[in-house]
Length: 284
Image 1 (cartoon, rainbow, N blue to C red):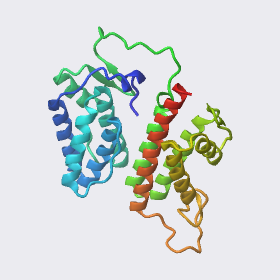
Image 2 (cartoon, rainbow, N blue to C red):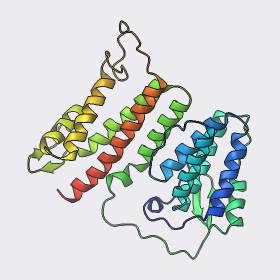
Image 3 (cartoon, rainbow, N blue to C red):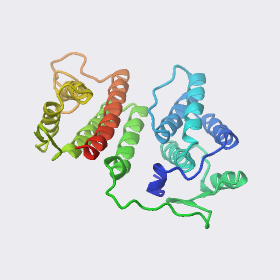
Image 4 (tube, helix red, strand yellow):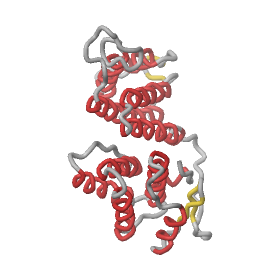
């Protein structure tokens, strides 16, 4: 994964115009022509959706995948470094999975950026600014929020889950993102409210305390849904993801459509919990 100044994620230093987006879109089209077109478009779509701060779901066909990808690329272009990192990371992952593909390397990408006067350059494993006169973004003195501290962990887990889905390893994909949900929940441990302190080391205890402390709120209802999904996926007679499946139960295999649903639901819950953590820690 390309490394970049963490502050750029939250304070975009530059945007990309539509001409740059169009050239990268053309590159993706040439890459896609080397294999299953829709699968390649879906692969890039996931990376650009993540860069834009949203999620993606599989399109109905290749034509719609191209349209949806371009929409995510335009959104991601509001933050030039994240756009560049999304293209590079997606390309490198695809190169690893498909050794026979010819992929743009850092030099080709840098030449494209330079052609359009984009003041960023890839120097693996880093993305740097070529503008030596740029005023550095000040580092905040206050402690980083949860989403800043855990951004790399979260992104890596989400990308790993998406890659596993694209490879047809659906059970492992759901396992990965279920692990992420449990990991994010631990950030609430020790959080105080008028109703008491969130205690416990494990998911069920932490979530149970949060629900009791925030009755009648959206957070309580979301945690109820989260608990239900977590319980289903954990149970041997349910999803059989966490504690193994019941071999006597028919139809135990997780289907791709089910796995995609589970992953998308958990992604939305993780995003919600991150925002709620920041709200609660700022307004205890």
